[in-house]
Image (cartoon, rainbow, N blue to C red; front, side):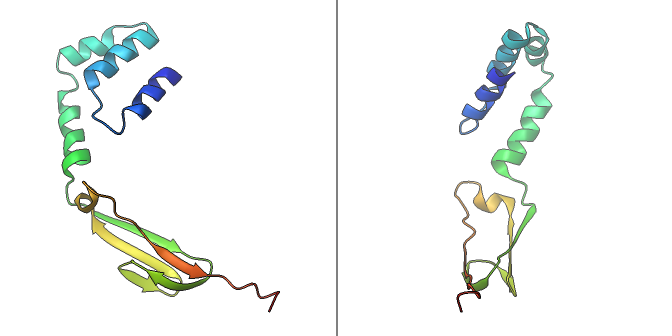
Length: 113
């Protein structure tokens, strides 16, 4: 099964061709039912739902929260509460570009002071 895992990981940056994946599964497990299921349209609804979620995005709200172990002095967060920073955005905002979560903080070595 490591071969299959490696195939999925290496194809995650591009389009994962389900038909080719079924053929790989057939070869690895020594069966033919995955390819037969694919040819009969069994995965069509799955393909459509994954394309909608992974490619188009549904505009769902995504939240990220980080608590830093020091004195917060800069962040691109939407909300700051003490040393906790929070971001809220829709999933399709970072569909075609990265969205970097940036936080800068300082820690003080009280023993040295």
